[in-house]
Length: 140
Image (cartoon, rainbow, N blue to C red; front, side):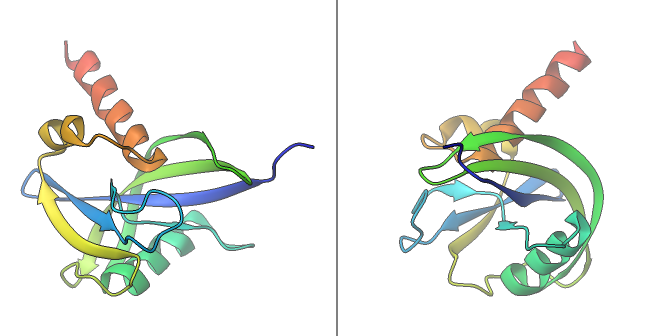
């Protein structure tokens, strides 16, 4: 029997050429204590914009606005396939802070140097790293 597919959205928030990364809680079933982009599963009937706004409100305490899709792709989980969508977003109101027990720490890092040091990558960070590598190739 084929696994069901779930969709999730992650957000890339930039400030002063740095990207916001979140350390996942040790209580998370998948990828505990792994650096990630802020993300959330999409709810039935929700648009990408709806999910992005929910991430902002409930996980980071800010108002987010989508700018563009950066990358998307599949990942395998035990019980389902995950279709992850990485979006570049901007903070319209507020300063990101932890509002959910999904994360234990937020940091602003230079993604090009930070991501190669992350030993375990979830789908959102893997896709973001692929996007950054593709951008470097296009600049050559």
